Length: 458
Image 1 (cartoon, rainbow, N blue to C red):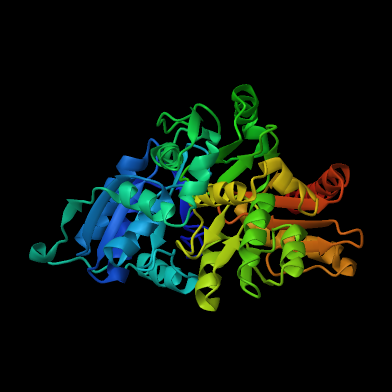
Image 2: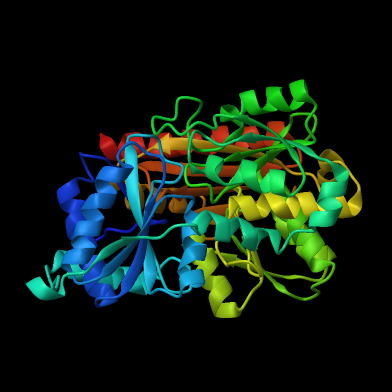
């Protein structure tokens, strides 16, 4: 961390608490952020991680020292804090969260006055302040203030309800199982669902920053309990959130867990039926399914690099109204152009209520692709070299290099191999018309990558 003049990764600043991300560094980062915002007013909040209050205090100290006024919102989902920025017309926000990372990690996200995380160009300005030690600390009588900001969750829930068909949803009396990941999703999702007229069964809904129920990334292998609960209580569907509740992954009424591509494609299909020729923004890691739906319903697909910040910034630039990621992030521009797990849940409910169909039926009507994913550990120092070596090995397959390496094959299968911007790993995303073929692709390119890394390390 903090090498080569980089603080920010794909999605904010991340590091192991009290090791890579200490209070001292967090305070210094806060000072750099405060200097960039030039004595502005900033909302500050955090997720459920055990290191959250400690690092939030440190960041707040840096912001106040640089002359910024801090509105302390406490523990809240990232999208609730982002919505509060627009609602209260402040200059931005600083969110202490490591999203889906394991519990020992924490991080810092910085949000602009439109509720969207900073662009890469803005991040570089903060990095330059940090590394060049150009933080401007305020005079003793111009130090910033700290005050509490209550009711942001009330405002956030009310805003989501404005985009849901409450009457139709309530009439269906849906039963929803919620896996809140022992984090901030439990502060919003159960309440929102009940206010939409749903019966709610929760698991992992107690706040605990050690994440005892499951790891905070909502991957199928982490969601066996949710699947079982959906079947046991005969719920209409289940939804699982990540550590800061900006992502949501769904289980249909049979308990089958679906990757985010499928639920995003369902929202995309519904959206394009009333918004012809609109732009749909999605990273290159998304399934070909998203393109299939865009083609079928007259949408214009825009591929981007991987990362929620890139999707949001592209939506802002193009004035696009919908974006999505394969990891469960849905960006509904009518609400806010950021990924929002609770908003996504309300959209899925509205689609089900309008159609009168079960979630498994709606997803079954989409083109079918099987998704498999993998990870390969890789030191930060070897990522660029390994990617270059792999590109040389697959040069004859006409790779797409918008972000990492993506290969498409004639049987409509594909694989993306890219270095993570938040962890010392390579991520592999494969899709095919059979799960066996997708798994073979992950295994094949995992093996190729490991051999390259072994040669580089020897």
